[in-house]
Length: 202
Figure 1 (tube, one colour):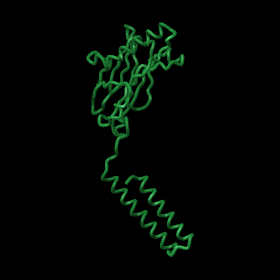
Figure 2 (figure 1 turned 180 degrees about the vertical axis):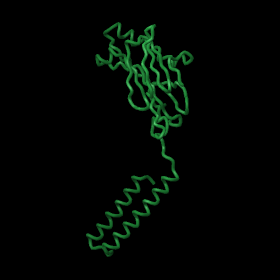
Figure 3 (figure 1 turned 60 degrees about the vertical axis):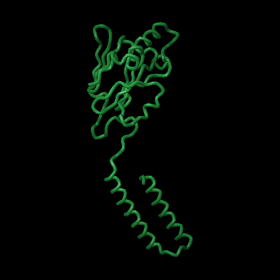
Figure 4 (figure 1 turned 90 degrees about the vertical axis):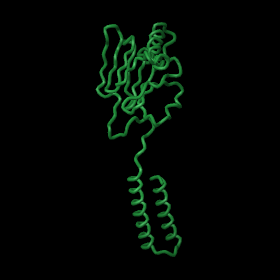
């Protein structure tokens, strides 16, 4: 029985007791109160026993249990390379993409980092190139994403990339469209050429 169900059961029991008193029920208020307190004690004991027996379930998208304090962006560094590419590195992966001055990243939460084309994002075209997400391998909800690819597993965590379902470049600007497509094609290797993917797991 869930906490919510237990709470509702107790609340209904108390409501019924008060209703019987107000309508001239045969039970005395003192007896009703004692019975309600006894019921609450029994529910609390049952809940504690259930919590002891059952391990907490990980929520959708969580990579590890919370006491490990997982953070996909732990010790993140951002390096512009001599060839113009750019490397983002965390404790868990390294990703190197071309045209480093045309894109940016955003840490969404403890489990995901998104990459955007800067010009397209600033021009309200979206600019989304892909989002790297850490998930629990046992949680297959990510398979419902319209366009994704698996990067691989490391340390009991599955890493995937969630691709946009449309081109989010400024299609009226040839340079922006080309820059967007170049970086997107590199991230696309995770799906089409996994042996040459730009992401290295640690």
